[in-house]
Image 1 (cartoon, rainbow, N blue to C red):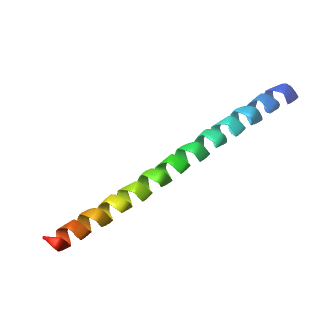
Image 2: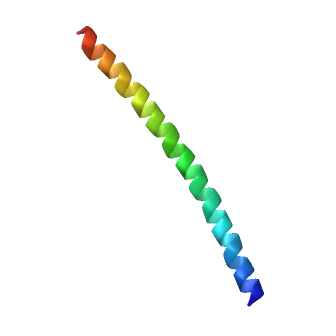
Length: 47
């Protein structure tokens, strides 16, 4: 029983680490998208 709980906790920890990485990647993509949106806005203003 303890072994199974330990295995489940390890899996949860792995999944949590994966989600943290995925979240950081999404945060980076959102920042890049915001930068691009700002660039397009500036380009539009100069037209």
